[in-house]
Length: 97
Image 1: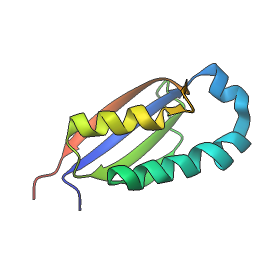
Image 2: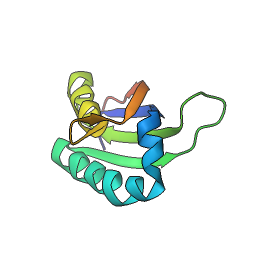
Image 3: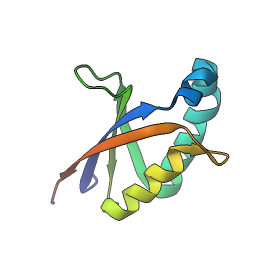
């Protein structure tokens, strides 16, 4: 079990939304999975949050400290040099052994 759990609330940019669900499923999700593996991040769950302005929430577990997770977040928010997220907000849970 990782020492950190990150709850990442994402607001997708308008250009990303225009790409549609097929792009999300066929392009972004596979790339996201590769980046998770590359950075040592495990996606526990993702879904639609209620009561907040953001579009999706992703729950990650990892041993990456905050600086490493921020690097990972930068990678998953961009595809082929195009920024897809308008912004994100992250809650960090530190879970010592």
